[in-house]
Length: 70
Image (cartoon, rainbow, N blue to C red; front, side):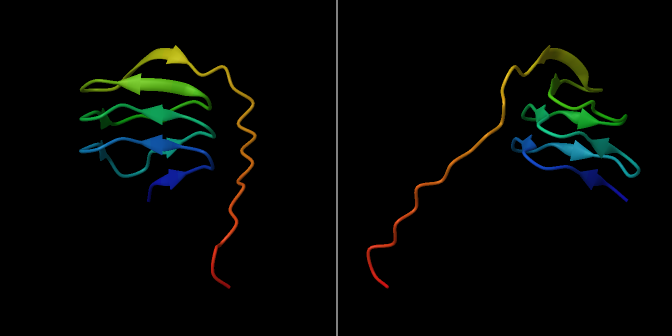
């Protein structure tokens, strides 16, 4: 089974192989093939994936959603 933590962004056409864990806040670039675990806050790309950078963010999102119709 695949485990995907919170705040992960997976782009289009990504292939994730069975048994892989994608850590908190990781980003997987488009067209990547993920065959090993991805560490938290890593940016990975390629076939097979390799770490190209690390995200420097607090990942604190504040949604200001106000519905017009109730």
